[in-house]
Length: 372
Image (cartoon, rainbow, N blue to C red; front, side):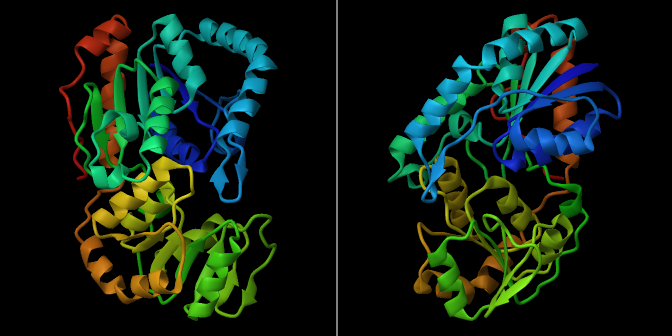
């Protein structure tokens, strides 16, 4: 089977997840991947046949997404190099004739599938915003952000034959052709053996208030993700700043007592898989992070906090035993169930005469792949 696989360039979770899926598919199929930004650079190091394309980007400032600036910079992109690159891309893919297209929230691959009537399968976590129902406690206080995010998600990847939604929580599907599957984890995480240490793993871009609160608590913290980073380990009181290192990060995560970070899906699901309670501080203006963090708290796996305070941090640390007990009930057998569901959906989609037929015969509403 010839598979075109598009990967969103913003947020490395798309890239790390897609690498796992593509490596699995390469065992039996021919796969060409397209990606932009950091996702392209990451995948190009690990996979054959990766093509760089222009992609969406987000304008950031003061710990939140600047919506107007984001809109303007992407409009400039669309009016600049994108049209010429799209023609070149379409011509090259036409010559290859893919039998099915997969997209991890990458709009160009999805557009190609719609225009060329090639079956399209979506595999990502953010589709849960649009394709599932959410209780009022998940959206309250953020209804405008929820509606905006849902509209964007719906526009990015419309009319797929099947939506495979990676998730750690159960949200009732609201639309047909929606399958909930377990999170897709990096092999390093699947192979890690969790141990209970005494430090907090902190992933932060360097917010001063957060670091000050953590330092004042006296709890040992190993800090990653600082903007600019450090070239070697730096100790500042109870804070130990770590240089960028995949091996070091996984080691500090598997031996952590708990995690302090934003509401990003990838790290959150890695922490849950390893049984690590999490204090999640979602990025303002990013509803998907708010949603993840609120479900985390709802399940009893940790805390969702708008900002850090001594009381919030102290309460989180005091309740770590409680969160660990709840997390012990989470079950997931690596990536087996998710990869099996993806392979089955692709085989079915490619076997259909066209995308419309695949859509009409898609699995029933709310089918879920088991975590075992």
